[in-house]
Image 1 (cartoon, rainbow, N blue to C red):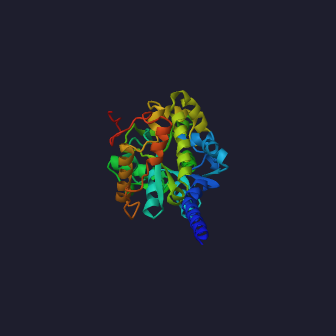
Image 2 (cartoon, rainbow, N blue to C red; image 1 turned 90 degrees about the vertical axis):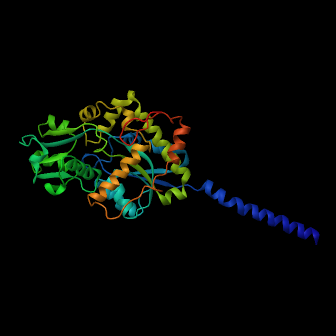
Length: 358
């Protein structure tokens, strides 16, 4: 009888041990079969290609694919000509795990209940160019009151246009704002169906299509920040995979930020057809690759995103307020920076867009 009891006790202990370690084993083995990354835009004619940041470089160099190759996990990039609003719609239908977003569609999605976590920043700063048809007689923005101004509504461009109007003492009601994507905006400038737009100007100018009405040099109050997020569901199920995604993008950001790769990046990005090589050369003149390709979630990032939330509410682009509390998850970025010895590689910027003193 004692032998039988001892045997029963041992079996019970073994069963408890198996039960205790089962969740850990399942967590260690659990991984996705597919990682779905969404990009809010596409190249000319719907070409499946990004531009203008280390996100584009990561795609063109296959950074994510290489990161997950040994795990047997496939990576699916989807490019949406419908931009940020289309990414939100796809995510709402359960078709996206990660995405790059400009500020307005990111905020709109959050305000409507889409659940995601911001895991790193992806773009910032730059000059702004407001262009008009080549033969336009306008001298200032005031000359365009009541005229047709194009923007891609629902995107970061719409919020940026609102900032420009406000900067010069106007509102959207002072103009006829029409909704056009980038390709259609270029065509409409050529046919003079619109009277102005914010767009990269130099290729259009060289072809006699448009000219610069005014330029706003580096103004952190006008430009915005880009963000990369992960769905809350994916993060909860696959935190180790989230870390590997961030690791891959941080490596791509460091490569893109290296000045010796400056020209190579411009040539890669120009393949999209949206912005020409000469435009990249001129619009990035005066900026280091590091300052515009930092993934940091620093004071500038947080302040600028909060400002965008406030502006979205003020311009009546969202109905519900959005809080940054619990939305930004920096731990994956912090781990990647530490493991890759990049903690001090990028400068941190304060709320006004100035490098913070260490």
